[in-house]
Length: 131
Image 1 (cartoon, rainbow, N blue to C red):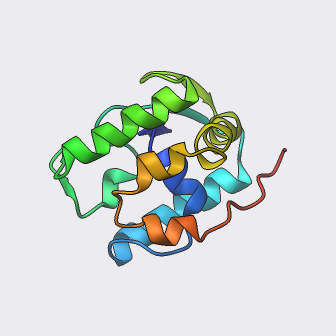
Image 2: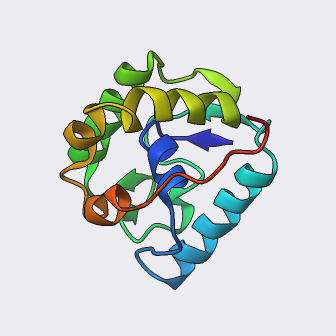
């Protein structure tokens, strides 16, 4: 699976809300698959990834808010000590993101400009199988 670095955060805070029905259904499938198969190998991507397939902000093979999401991707990767192309199990990447972002002030710094921030800051990260 290919994921943008900032999606390491979005997946963990997902509560069933999305941009539209198609996006929400796709995101739900991805989130459930990763929750039930935390050993899934994830490669950090630049540009659109496997979650972006159904995103209404996707225009062709690019995002219509490239500066914002690229800035978030860089900040998450930096906070977690990761780089595009890195591959690891979902459980390891998600743990790094929880420890480096959710457990620090990086969460506010990285995510405050996101439309979903208010919902995410009220959402607890669910238990991760295998931890």
